[in-house]
Image (cartoon, rainbow, N blue to C red; front, side, top):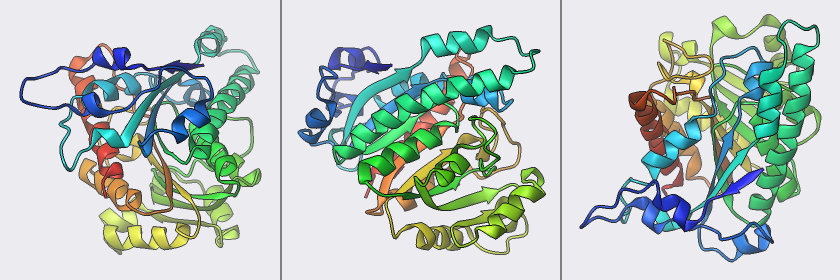
Amino acid sequence: MLQLYTRATLETFISARKGETKFGEKVDTLSSQENLVDQLKQREAKYVLVGISEDIGIRANRGKAGATSAWKAVLSSLLNTQDNAINKGKRMLVLGHLEFPALMEAAKSLDPTTVDYHEQLSYLVNKVDEEVSYLIFQIVKAGKKPIIIGGGHNNAYGNIKGTSLGKSEAINVVNFDAHTDFRSLEGRHSGNGFSYAFKRCFLHNYFMFGLHENYTSKKIFNILETYSDRLQYNTFESIEIRQEQGFSFQMNRALNFINNRPFGVEIDCDSIENVPSSAMTPSGFSTNQARAFASFFGKHRNAAYLHLCEAAPNENDADEMYRIGKLLSYIITDFMRK
């Protein structure tokens, strides 16, 4: 269910200061959800910000719950950045967030000891897929670029499907991630959004950027080799540990593989060192590398959306919420700049 954010909603997040103009004071909003595509077509903003508040897909993948809080952390930080000639709020429309109270309650009420526990969670993930893909379809159909915050990486499937349908063609994706999320079609969860999108012909070329060699199975590597004309990757170790090829070189290599079609940019916070997430890593890319990645791909004409997922700050820890909000705000604004 989409919770629409009006101007009054945003005002509760903005700390106005005399002599300054905040980013949130210049972003656009809608007053209703009716005729969403037509309304968006009439707006100047190029980017549409959407939150996803769920962690059902992470639970179904046996991950750490908590990815519901990232959206709230982002709003407080992003809307209070400065509006200026470089950081222009008028280029963004804040639409609102998708929430799934009934599905989340159903997920929490399930008994993890039952034989079909993960099967039941996968059924709920399918319901999330339907809403995510439809909303993204509407945004893309209106000629806008979604920036999607929060939820598990299961939502990559809805992003890809919705963008593909909105563009009327299969799309490409580059994924900044420690994992392929290309696991078996064993029921939907956060570890197989890309494999389902590939199987159902919404995803054409897929580049996996920064895989961790310790956490990529032999079976996955074999699949990548089998479909090497459409599935390519590099590893974190080859770039940062053995330093066989540079970060910039690899970004250009990925771009050459995906830039012939509209492409999505996926950034999993699991890949950024020491970021509270569903699978936090002590060894990963730096925050500045994540920012550079978003900036590099975001400035290209065929970039169709940005998805920042799996961040799981503790909602009761103000410092953690502040740090995650500020990090993701940097990445969002980097993606938007030309």
